[in-house]
Amino acid sequence: MRARLIAAIALLALAVPAAERSFAPYTSVQAILETFRDQLPAALQNPNAAKWTAWSRQQDRTIRSRLEQGDLDSMVNLLLFGTSFTTRLRVRIEDLAQASKSGLLRGRVDDLVQGLRAPGGNERLSFLRTMLVRKNVDPDKTGAFILQNLERVLKENVTFAQQVQSGNRAQVFHDRGVSLDTTILPNFGIEETLRDMKNHGNLRENTVRRIAVIGPGLDFTDWDSGYDYYPQQTIQPFALYDSLLRLALAKSGSLEITVLDISPRVIDHLQQAQNRARKSEAYVLQLPRGEARRWTPGAVTYWSTFGDRAGESVAPIPPPAILNGTETRAVRIRPEVVLACQPVDLDIVLQRLDLAPAARFDLVIATNMFVYYNALEQNLALENVAAMLKPGGFLLSNDKLVDRPGGVMKSAGSTMVWYTDQPKAGDSVNWYRKQ
Image 1 (cartoon, helix red, strand yellow):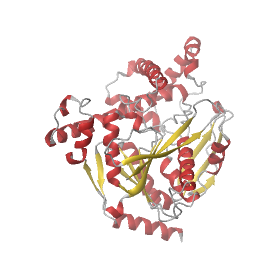
Image 2 (tube, one colour):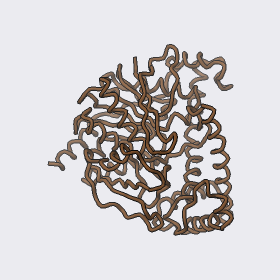
Image 3 (tube, rainbow, N blue to C red):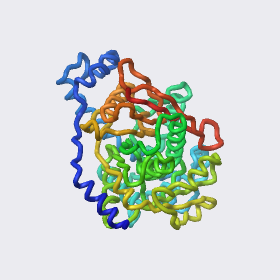
Image 4 (cartoon, one colour):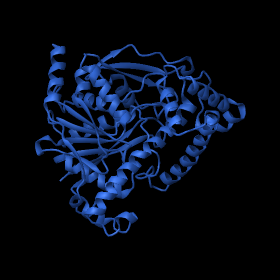
């Protein structure tokens, strides 16, 4: 029965023509450019259709180029927290001075350099090695290059912390590299928000069918805890499928999830997963949980039941000894769920899918994504989201966005979700509704 269902989903995916991707037309952004006329880049001063066409294509290339800087940030996380290339203790940011004095930091750098010279089957080291070759980094200066990036990240973190303290969280990473690293916790925030919206009557049972996930991430080093002892994975598309079924907002077998991302790595990862799913191979997610921070009871419950509607629990990969005290579980996601998640290369700031009204989305999810863009880019992204949403459809984001006068996306509420017992360790997930 399951094999027939998988085959039917695969044939359906082939039968439905892919929506065309296009850049937002000038007519759809004129009002936004007028609103931000005093903040427009030089190439868009006194805008017209020709200037918009030239700038939007160039800006798309600029945004995509930020992915490599994000990969370098992931390299720094791997240096400090990774366990796949070393048996040395991990280094917390607050302990860097002591780690440097004791030689621990230098030892981890040396181990990482050695791993990059002979990565073997380590996919993360192989990726970094290829990136460093592409950047023409002298093999004899790899350690210095790694330390330079660590210093850069530390300086950036100070600046980001100052901006957050001043209340400027919404655009705090607008000039930072775009990192793919993610973690399970924002998905708990989304599930709690969906439950809240259902309780308030904003979403009804079995009414959600078509969803888009923008920038779901791909764990190089889980950004919350830096884990790297399991294969790279993406969580959010499958977490969303799981939550919608748990809350009875959708029916199994009827959900269509479109994954929108600018990263070739994310697109390829999902395409490869779908290729395996067509052969009835499942997708296994590893879900470690460390002791460094105490999760709230709600977060623990979410973690312990994660995947029970989209798959089943299986034996996890054991953490290395250096991660003593780490709890973990694993979930095998059913092949038909993987096939329901279609990856699409799309820059949400400047592009959209040209969808017929009946094919537009009921719901769009974007967590930890808008912070990478300035106010102009955020408003352009909102316009593209609106073009792909059905009237009355919702965008959910843990980034605070400002309603633009005349815009069709309006704030409709928010849900505060706490992840741990530490101050400010949570998300305010904001609801934006298409008028």
